[in-house]
Image (cartoon, rainbow, N blue to C red; front, side, top):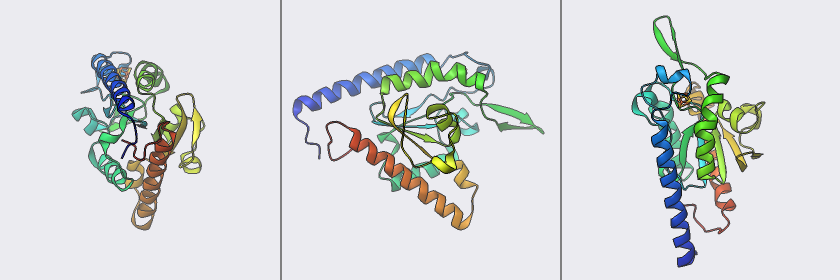
Amino acid sequence: MSDLTADERAAREGVRRQKCEAVAKLYASAQDCTGCGLHRTRTRVVFGTGNAASPLMLIGEGPGANEDVQGEPFVGRAGKLLDECLFYAGMKREHIYLTNIIKCRAAIEEGGRVQNRPPTAEELDECVPRWLRNQMEIIQPLVICCIGAPAAKVVINSNFSIMRERGRFFECSYSSHAIAVLHPAFILRQEGAEYQRLRGLLIDDLKAAKERAIAARSEAPKTLF
Ligand code: SF4
């Protein structure tokens, strides 16, 4: 139960509406982006989804094949595992804002198959200031949770080591509280006990991000949403 007054609740609702409208406008303008060469091969721009007024923003690397077709971040097996871990951490997608550092699929054709590839530095230099940075400026997340090393290197520190530094909080230029977690796609490549161990770490780190977001909210209600 929130202990906010009626005025505080109204003020919060006003801010929520403003953020949602501003993000929706930005989303609309991103749909035709030709800022880098990835626009030639993408099916859809994968901008982001969820609650633009959430204090918690999750940021992955970029869309893969399923995301490119559906226009949503984290669909497919990795998305299913992320949803499962969010659930065990006490959250759903509608509680958070979920996006990627790059908005169009980066892929390469090898041996007759189209494979995902990491975005180049030039592609990131075009995309991040146009879209991710503006998303963060509107949403002003109290806590940023980077999913995997590529997002952590862009958002937290270019030398970030996911195996050594995941689960710890850092200050970055976008938020006073930034944490990185293992990428569900990486966890899915493990087996048996190691799979269970890493899945447990992801749940624990997501819980830590949620708890930090609750603590960071100045009104300090008992619930995050
Ligand atoms: S990756 Fe980013 S900059 Fe490049 S076309 Fe897509 S939205 Fe535009």
